Length: 402
Ligand code: CTP
Image (cartoon, rainbow, N blue to C red; front, side, top):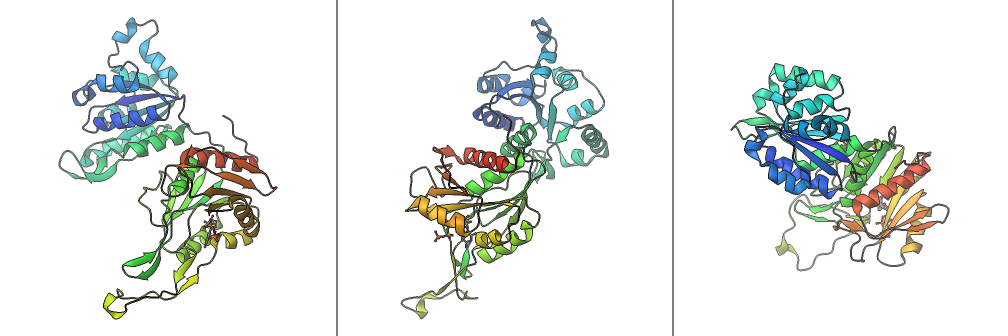
């Protein structure tokens, strides 16, 4: 989504300036072209050479030296930006922009740009809460500037509180969202992801190898394309993507209740979760002690098939399922498509290298209601997510413009 986009990255002076280096790497990895502007104090924390080496472009630091170029430097920087990100943004720079002051390269370029601007503030918690700062942020927000809030934690100044720069990954995702083609605006996408856990006793459970990566990638991509996203996930190690409504569940029964409740709001439902098909008939309240039995037999009962239940009440919604198979891929997937009343099923052979659980790539086949089958090559889960959403957008009559 960021491929070929031009991003001006403004870096202000703060201890979090080093995190802008990691952010730059994420942008470059995604194929964006980055032009870095540093304030004088930013250069006390990180050298321009670091940004220059990683971006492959000269770093801009000085308002007046750029006048020696053929173009007027700050205007050309301001014009070429598809997005302008200031991270970390200090109270000083935000205050200057709010007051219309343009007295260095960064503030002058910000004044001249017509691109969307994302400020990612990082500062001491008392500065963050200071009414002067709050007024400046409110004023700029009302004017259409975007802000990504700092997170709470131990601050470099020794205080504990709100003021830390968010993870570079969160800033990256916010940038993707701002640059996204909003072809799913107006849609509400319900995604389920991850495994479920079926408790045997307070310390043991039945589950599967699902990491949640595919479902989280779909949620992230849908949000970046302008949809409201509701993500229901079983236990995973992943952070919920920025800007999605996140509901954590543990068991299949909890996932069913949450999915049925949130289904009401959704226009598109994508069921990427690997639901455990069975749960123990009884779950012990106490830890099962090994002295009591030499052998143990556990009786399981079937969990509800959430997707099949959703299929019965889907109405006009688009309903998409996944089929994790180890044999007879097409035949088994088609059976699920029909029996669960789906519009589309994403089938994958989980035994193939580079596909299935807990890897970053997937090799899938898309099976449609009319019998059509589309084979996709090995792709990252983010790419699979976007292709899937492209196809869904067509079904909703919202063909994507590139
Ligand atoms: N699914 C579900 N509820 C279940 C089991 C599966 O909603 N109790 C959904 C999954 O989220 C997925 C689809 O059904 O979208 C297919 O899941 P999969 O595990 O491939 O197949 P099952 O239907 O469980 O059938 P089987 O285990 O026999 O292959």
